[in-house]
Length: 481
Picture 1: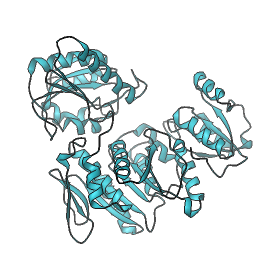
Picture 2 (picture 1 turned 60 degrees about the vertical axis):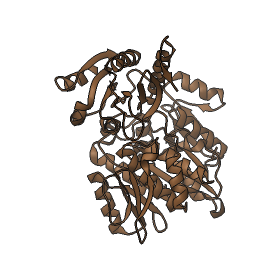
Picture 3 (picture 1 turned 45 degrees about the vertical axis):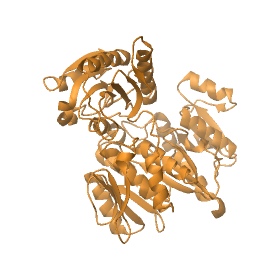
Picture 4 (picture 1 turned 180 degrees about the vertical axis):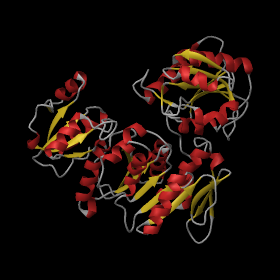
């Protein structure tokens, strides 16, 4: 782990004892702080007590004895209303911060010889794939890359730092709201579209949170910014005018005077004196579709900023094995391919997967985000049939009515089995995008949060995988691994 510096001998409250909070408590303790923990859930408190941590109801403690409140990112800071711990901390003048901020302060306090490089990645969509891709590219080239943050391991649970390490961090808007000192060597802002607006008080609050990833960069640092949406274009223009760092625009749909971009599946580097053709992304089987070309452009720009050669970067792109729950093929049965895109928790993310296939059987639903699936109407003609689950099923049915066939299935196992039977019956070969042809596609891309039926999108994706495995075990199936 990374022992947190700056709080030696001081009491630090930690609220929220999921992965992030408990990892932060361990790191604070390892650095000499005295963490005081609390969670509303008895099971979470019991797990912390089993590790020997001090537990105290933060409604009852003397806040003047506390140096800081370490808040888990899932706990509301400002909207829809501040959590009670936030109100108590503010009333007492106690600093509120998150695990990324603890990491940033520890990096900033390290002596130069021990200070690692940091690549921080955010965006509405694609940040997990890009984080994993950057880590893969660095590791394949022999660099010591540690991947974490909002993906995999909490950042403070990664191996301790040294001067040759590179921390590749996915950072959410919730985490950025709690961060003020992060100064990444490379900051990636992939894209912005409406999401989590209830937690940020609207679109401008959400944009402001995302922009915080660029807050402290200066001379010698690199900002990689997607310009395929109007908000990214605006931010790129504004910080280019400030001229405080190296700016690398990225695009998955248009050539630019300077930057990294993909056209028709070919990645180009226009950051130097001449335009280089870097890689044929159609060979990168785990990066199908235009949205993944944007991810590839960002990852390439980031690793090049840290000195990887064009050749090593290109090799890393085409050898990337892919990310679980993001357009992940989890099985083939009788000419039907099952694609797990459980990480598509909003309509914009689902659009990316739906755009990759000309025809598909679509499993969707859960706890709907603002706007539902209305923005996907232009893709409804691609839907062979929709299989609707969870709280959003009736609303999604209303949106699809008269525009695409659908069935309300309720739960994921029923939807998977029904979609498979229908895909078998139609037998249409529909896959494209360089991933092989002749298969019908059953696509789980829910366009919803998972919390009505599952603990998180990973649990939903694993349930889909289990449902496909159950189908494979039935007799007389033509199964291909």
